[in-house]
Amino acid sequence: MGRFIGLSKNKGSGHQLEDPNTLNSGLVLTSNGTGFVLAGGASLDRDPLPDFINANETLNTTLSVTGAFGDSVYTFAWRDGAQYGLSISSSGTLTGAASSMIALSVLKLDITDTKYNKVYEVDVEINVSTTNGYPAITSDNSSLTGIVAPYSVTFAASNSPTEWSITNLGNLASASGVTPTIANTGVMTFANVTPSTNTYTFTLGVRNASMPSGVYRTKSFSKSIEFTVVSGQQQYQGAYGQNGGQCSYSWTAPAGVSKVHVMAGGAGGGGARNWAVCGGHGGGRVWANNIPVNPGQAYCIQVGRGGCWNSTTGGCSCWPGMNACGGCCGCYGGCYSIGAVTDGTGTCCGTYGMIAYNNTAGGGGGAAGYCGGAPANSQTSNYCGCGGGGGSGTSHHSSTHGTGGGGGTGACGMCCYATSPASCGHCGNSGYSHQTGSGGQGGSGGTCGKPGEPWSNGNQNGHSCGGCYGGGGGGSGTGNSGGWGGPGVVRILWGASRCWPCCNTHNL
Image (cartoon, rainbow, N blue to C red; front, side):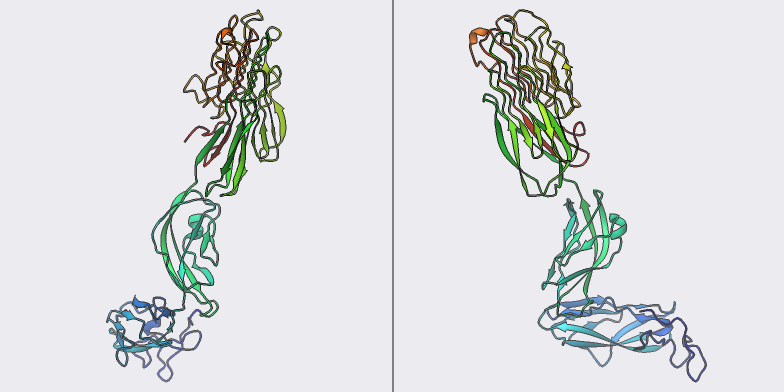
């Protein structure tokens, strides 16, 4: 409570109370009427002394006087001799164990204003738990690093406090941009934090049922706390050499990760083994950003296996709510669908191979998150694109020449991190007489498709496979062997400044 501002005159003398020459010089009645303070409106600072202390604790604090005359100098001493085995220095340092104190201990002090030769008697009451039942904050002032979303800091205390409070906000609101809250478990939660390192100054209080309501044992902090964002990636791929279908995985959201960015690419279709038929199509591609996840929860991931060498469609790749179909043979590139994840809904199919001669063009690469429906480039030049290159089929008219598979689009985004020839989804080359056309290359972060070999190698030679990820298998020119489709992929990203299709989608 505030103190009276106006000062009454000293009864009998007519002098002002703040006049040091009066009988009761400087005594000013407090606003609650229960006691007097020191000369010149000065008072003993009660805050350094605990209101509540356990018998197994010690005192070590320096007393001070506030609001004194500018030239007042104070000294401290016991009144009526030493008390409870404690010691006090003339400068006001109070030390000693509380083990000899009683439940309601009264410290009787003489405080002398040596400038004006005035001695003031001060009685200080301290509640002592002889059973050591009062709670006390035990967390120290050490720095905290690597605090991640949902951005909370846990404080500890002894004797099971039933209530925590931020008794002094200090710079918490200004430093964090929003006032944090503290639960009765000691967990302080920050919201809307910008990743950074700040030094927070504040005071916390605790109490339990052994203390009066609204009264706390407090501790002040000046604590450096570093808030960070967890960054990482996880990638799963399908397999070659199987008859389409899917591989299943389980991904568990790491601690501190509450949203992810996911891309799924279907597996490439297998090339046909019949006369003068298409190479396999590239797999479909779909992504979504800012998908909510729960730290510690497991999520089912399914990733497509490449299509068989005999025109089998590649397997789909799926994240919950997202589906990227595998490529087939002889029609559109792989389709994709997206449910209510975060980035809208819809279904779309990829581009297809431009057929220069009937049944001689490979399939186009799967749509990389964009709708297709138009011919993909089918030339043998170094074409690459977000939709994957179209299979080659323009060089030769003879039905014995194999056709290239459609290109995939890789796993590291659609901005073509061009550090290798496989950085984008190149088309596959056509084969020559009695050869299978090469498989379509994978895209960024993927691998090249493998070239075809002479027909004499027979069925299932496997050397005209589509590249990782999602490249189509090459088509046979003789009926002997098509190529396997490239496997699909699911790639999960999390962290600051990362998103599909282009923002830091490579490995960090």
